[in-house]
Amino acid sequence: MDDAPHDDARPAAQPDAAGARTGGPTSPSEEFLELLHDVLRSVRREASELLGHEMTPGQLRLLRTLDRCDRPRRLGELADVLDVAPRSVTSKVDQAEEDGWVRRVPDPADRRATLVELTEAGRAQLARLSDRRQEGARARLDVLTSDEQRQLLGLLRRVARRR
Image 1 (tube, rainbow, N blue to C red):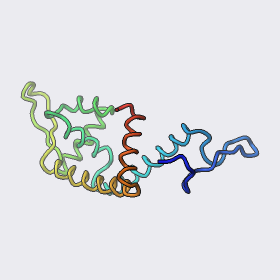
Image 2: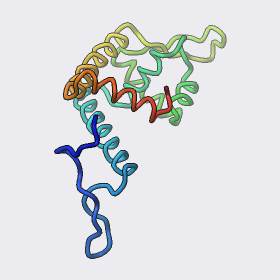
Image 3: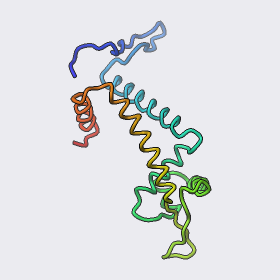
Image 4: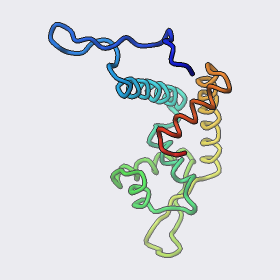
């Protein structure tokens, strides 16, 4: 990528009569934040359309969390990992269980406790959604050449400090 102006360059922000900034960002950090916000907002909007009425973003997060777990988890553990109130996890698990995506199983270490695990139907649903999300990501990246894609990913890794 070169430093030459592009058609999608934003105008510099200018103060209006009241002194408020109007127009585009005034610094690279502002433009970075605005562009990042724009990309994330469009990804969230696309994900919401993708999920439709099948699942809420919170339910998707629950299923993805369970998928990454090495074993079934207690509701309290899930609440901690998801950083939500336990009652919120209970309602998400109730709905996901009704939809057949998770099941409650007895905790072998404590018969008073219940664990939650992903079902095969839940794994299949995640795979379908993942495939559709990948298609969206590919379409977003297709506006770039292969070299530009590699460069973008390299720059994002540096910005994220994930060399």
